[in-house]
Image (cartoon, rainbow, N blue to C red):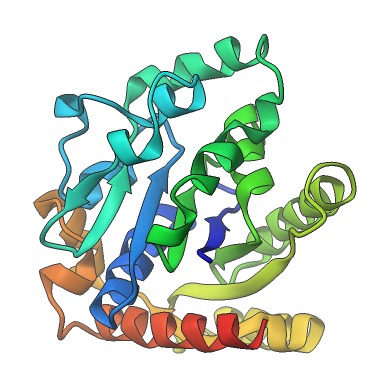
Length: 256
């Protein structure tokens, strides 16, 4: 059975898409079968996987509206080694169209159930706002991976996200839980970041992943080449950190 995880944070600019594509590539590198679902109309996870969002015959938009299956819409990110259910600007219109449909929050969950045996992991890149698209991701998922920078404003955003997850858990998806917090863009030389990191460990304990993703130029450059950093420069510090994170994810899932 595939483990389905949302990569979510209601604060923008915290590296959600970078985390999603590099975790997907890291998992594929260690032999896992991975589907990346891009739920953001900007389509950055699609493009960052080496898939041209403008050339897609079908997208997650078509899947949510029931016009095609995940199997029909998913394409191969050949260089990265995983499958992509892509998105483009069409997806912005899904917010309005989904309102009229039955079980509108659970359309993605129903679609993914049909391909469950084909994957070990499904990673969902959510938009930064709490929208009907994000709700579809949270209703489909077993858990949430929260990438966050070690800054005080990030802690405020985390409080909002925890409250949202509690509400979805209570009303829509009793399986939903926080799988873990991933510290990203981390620079140990900055005292503030070290202090916030220590606070996270103190407050959330083993919910904080041991893996830490350092601030890394090569990871930032990779999207302009249409590749995850793990593929673009496998020897970069950030790439190695994501592969270690992928291994930690597999271990954590085995304990679930």
